[in-house]
Length: 220
Image (cartoon, rainbow, N blue to C red; front, side):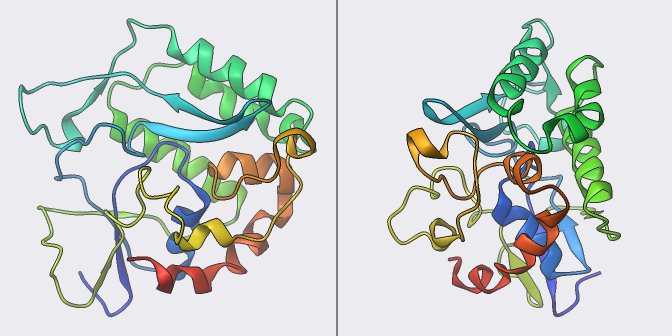
């Protein structure tokens, strides 16, 4: 049911910080599960930081239908050893962060067990982060595709976009800097995956998110 502060999201793999800022903005978060799968999107990509700068982790997928496949029907491709690669990359990137050892046991199982569908994988990871941040509300999934012009709705399906994050005027480029593992070598990188913030800020993560609620109104 739509309310005046409903926000509509696409699914995302370990979403960027801005995604969680938007999620905290509403108690009625809707997850669009009937939109078509889009390649090069946050649905199966996340951005972390390593010694070379921003680094993209990609979950390989296989379609269950030939064209315009709904995101709810996208399966993960386990023929590649991506789980091992992702976890080793996370370990290498964050084992010197203040809170990696504290949180690693919550995330490592996702890089050994096999969850067939991308949507389920993303949602289960999302629940882990919400539990760690003591966020009580969760997504309501859509029953059918919601038109972008729907009333009483903030639609961030297109505005929170992997390709837009590098635009000069993108509002979440103006985030408050926090200490990152490789900051001395590559500088501060804003709006990475929530996991970067969590491993570096720990229990202060939710407070940091709340400090950036004002940037949400600047998204186009």
